[in-house]
Amino acid sequence: MGAKDELGRAGEDLAARYLIRHGMEILCRNWRCREGEIDIVARDGGVLVVVEVRTRSSDARGSAFASVTEAKLARLRRLGARWRAGQGERFAAVRVDVVALDGFAGTFSIRHEKGIC
Image 1 (tube, rainbow, N blue to C red):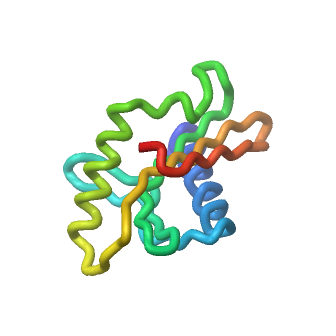
Image 2 (cartoon, helix red, strand yellow):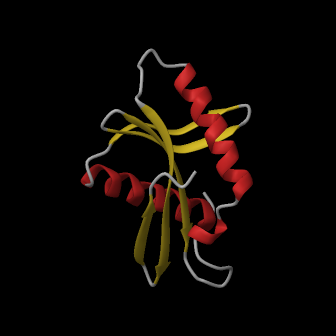
């Protein structure tokens, strides 16, 4: 596994633990279909949450949060609808969250933005 993949996996692990500590239930990780991937699928009460995790080890290319594009958010909305359609469970609503981790020297700051689209 390359350094970038290891950083991404570590970020997703940190994000999942963060979400659990804040009362969310992880339903699925790294769900894939032909159109793309959802990093984390979670439940927050009765709400289905599609979570994009972005991890950066430096600010050379900007913050992790700033790297999430409108096109990515639109894809996540579509993927969330597709994931939901394959489930027998109903949800009161669906939202897209971003968990952005910016790290330097092994320490990460976490920014969790709920319902960004």
